[in-house]
Amino acid sequence: MTGRRRAGSANAAVVPPPEAPLRILSSAHLADGDWGELSEFEFGLIVAAHAFDRWAVRCMAAAGMPDLTITDVLVLHHVHHRGKSKKLSDICFTLNYEDAHVVGYALRKLGGLGLVRGEKLGKEVFHSTTAAGGALVARYRAVRDRCLVASVPDRLGSLPERPGARTGVPASGRAELAHLARMLR
Image (cartoon, rainbow, N blue to C red; front, side, top):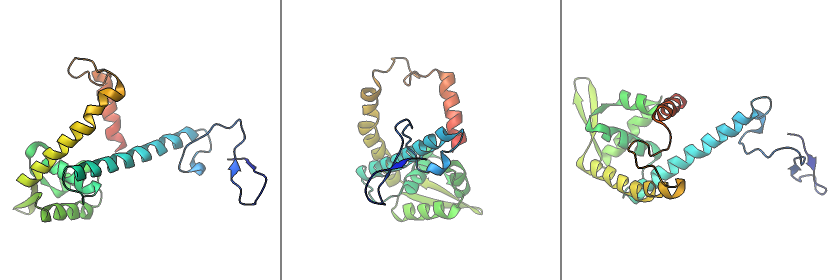
């Protein structure tokens, strides 16, 4: 980025020329060239990911479990998903964690809190939520519904009445967006 120094100290901030568009990004060295806008998009993804992480952790705290990390929250929800027991490798695969030790630590922590249990079948351990874990997930959902879901119509305007059309995006578009989101993960 080229710019002019303000008159004054040698440590004065660099001011961009007036004709240069303001770019909000984390790494100016990645914004050079034809794909500079991609750096802005990447920064948006970074900000959105961290905002979601904070939201999920705070929602879980409001549900009654304040000392969980985002990994703990995600693992708990996934273990509870569909009421089926899951192997460590399947949890790692679905949540896109390469380091099984991180997920294993979360499972041990959640087990110590009485939220999940492991059952050994052959050589594999299958993890499932306990009654306390299921109740916590239900409280999380209640907080989410009250704070997040309830605010969506206010933020986005009125939603269509047709089931499945809540987003205003056609079904084919929703499927494509979901596919792209899975590819980004």
